[in-house]
Amino acid sequence: MTQRTGGPEALPLDVETMRETARRLLAEDAELPTAGELETLTLTLRGHMMLLVPAVEDAARPLPEDDIPRACALACVGEARMRLGLEPGRSLPQAVADALRLARSVNALVDHVVNLGAQA
Image (cartoon, rainbow, N blue to C red; front, top):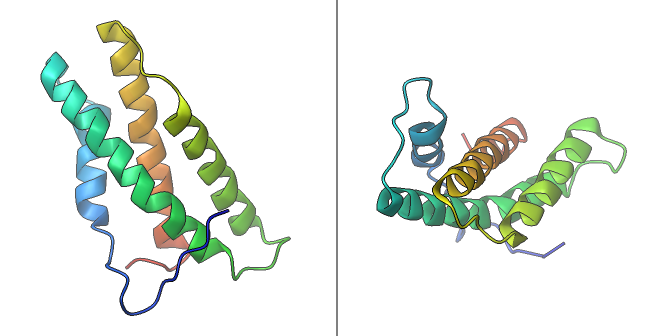
């Protein structure tokens, strides 16, 4: 795990924007983005994940090692790291599927940050 220094100098996460970005793909009435929009959404989601992973780790670290919310949060971090390490699909359907997985990870990471009390 990477160590971060939190504290007053750490900027707050914009969880509403992160959720809204994920919603662009996950909403029931979501329209299929163009290839350019999909690339932008994918890069944005990856950026959100890069901010959320250390925030979730920082929020989970003080909890006891046998704490269930801690274990769930760190499992989510592991999955997010795995998804960040995958090569994006080459076809539009593969790229959409990859972006959907990233969006679900962003939602889950935001949930953990909020549930662990790291973000209001």
